[in-house]
Image (cartoon, rainbow, N blue to C red; front, side, top):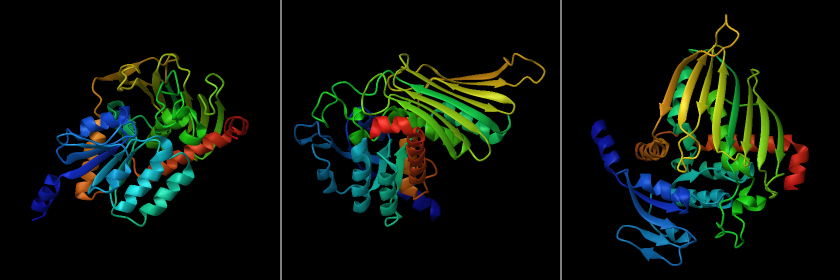
Amino acid sequence: MAETLILKLMTKTLKTAIIGYGVVGKRRKLFIERNKNYKLLYISDIKFKKNIKSKTIIFFKNYKEILKQNIDVVFITLPTYLAARVTLTFIKKGVHVFCEKPPARNVNEIKKVIQTSKKFPHIKIKYGFNHRYHSSVKLAKKIIKSKKYGKILNLRCLYGKSKIVAPYDNRFTGSKDDWRSKKKLSGGGILLDQGIHLLDLIRFFNGDFQEYKSFISNKFWNYDVEDNVFALMRDKNGVIASIHSTATQWQHKFRIEISTRYALIELKGILSGTKSYGKESLTIIERLPKSSNGTRIKKQYFFNKDNSWKEEIDEFANIVLKKLPIKTGNIYDALMVMNMVEKIYRADKKGVKRLFN
């Protein structure tokens, strides 16, 4: 009987919509359509000149048209200043929500989502922290959890690209500047846009941090959002993490080094749509107690396929259909990572005053 019920649930098709059809929205569409549990019916984006109906999908210019439709799931891939507002709207309508990061412009916005979600406990809300699903990250988590190399001593992270904005993406602002360059719209710069992945991952690997020190700057691009953030964090056990989130990295780069008692776990490169962050790998360098050079490489792993988007989308369908709890990328994760962002901003009082006041 139970097996029959599960089979029935898993054969149900989730009536699905996407709001926001930029680079990320198009990528989400690709993997939604590959999963038979979703039936993509509606897409909205302000760039559409008019409503268009294809064989299987209706394209709306205004997302409010989707509110009139009967759907089960919505994927929100909008600019940050719209993310929390639209999420709230669909929660109240009784629709399960998958929202891209950043989840909001600030902590207060995500707190409003949490308060509303308590009134709709049956609604699933998941956030798109897809880096957790990368093969190198999953393997690193497995190694850390096994405690084979002992407890974490410290973490050092770098995530960098060569710009803040996407040129000519002016459909939301009406100006030549992208919305990401405007604090009022974006909530922040490179830290909130890209560095948020690093913050999410160090929480994923180590847990929460209590002390924060930082330096933030917009010295190069001169927008009213930051283009560089250097931050130090320390947890209650003395584990220290450092991050550098930058928009002046002329060669795109992703690297996380996790020092444990008996080894260094190095994640280098990350597979992405742009393919500009290098090959994705994980290297384990064992500590050599009787040697001063510490160069012995125990194992190296190389990953050639990015399954993160697929796994994240497939998992969400499973969660909705089987009414499972969201264990990763849930609303609590969203709140905690936004808390980290704000603590880093506030830790550099001079930088915050110069940039955001």
